[in-house]
Length: 177
Image (cartoon, rainbow, N blue to C red; front, side, top):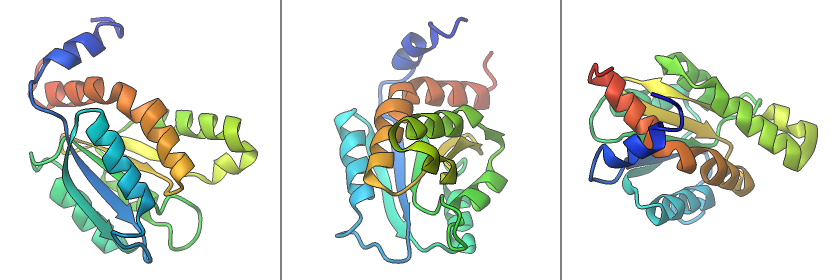
């Protein structure tokens, strides 16, 4: 099957919306101050997807790891979207924990994110450790918490390709060709 056929097949493979988890990684955010989580929720719902889980977790590797393990292969969510913890400070641990947990990485997500960020903000884009991949049959994406970064990741990279990615992941997990 050609890459051009994937979106059409993906759109028809299931009737129900894609079930999404939103996880904000922050030591300081609350539900009231989590602008990236709010934006993600709005964008997902506008695209017709279900927000099955929303939570804020601290920048603690064990907490992040537990969350990933609970979602990976749970059957409760198809995709988990993390924001925050992708920089290079000591407290930015999302990338480290998620990259260890992924069975299959999607290097193109991080590469495209940094390329598009470079076009907008210049060489500071190299500080982003955005990552995507699959763990236990669940898609995971991690992006910076800045609103401009969340908009870029969702609008230009994740949402346009989400149905084909979920379809491909489900198809592989079910052992279909």
